[in-house]
Every structure is written in C-alpha cells, then in structure tokens.
Length: 105
Image (cartoon, rainbow, N blue to C red; front, top):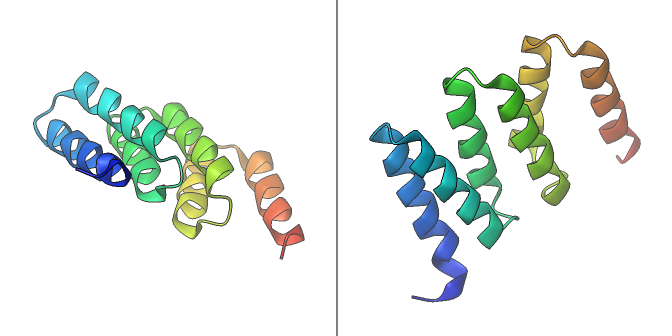
C-alpha cells in the first residue's frame, strides 16, 4: 500500500476502535494518523469529536487548535474550535481567534 494512504487506513481503524468503545486504541490510532499526515484535517476533526463526545472538552479544544496550526484556514476545524470555546466559556479567546482570522482576510 502506498505510504500516502497510510493515514486513511489509520483513520478508518481509529473510527472502528471508537465504535467498538476501545478508547485508548482509538486515541493512539488517531494520533498515528495525525503524525502520518498532519494536513488531513478530517482526522483532527474526528479525533477532537471523539474527545468531545467523551466529555473532554479541553482535550478536544487542544486537538483542534493544534490541527489549525497545520490547516490554518480550515473552516470545519475553526468553527468546531469556536463552538467548544463558547461552551467552556472562553469568550476572550474566541474573540481573539476570530479577530486574528479576520486580519488575514
């Protein structure tokens, strides 16, 4: 299998581990997929979603913000990060993030 598809396989395995409630395995596979291809925004999003569904909002936000460093203009990562910041009452950080993006447009 070509190396450029490794992240897709890892992503699928992570999704399956998540469905099977194998939390640590899913987490490790998401991390491997991210390390393999940090520009794959959908892996960052799914990994953050997994953490959010488990009630780990801070961890989810941390994943999204790190993902945005590699995918700065990704709308889905950005909006999900904003939603979580609002949920955990980080209004100033939300405002700063929006200002920063607007300055680049």
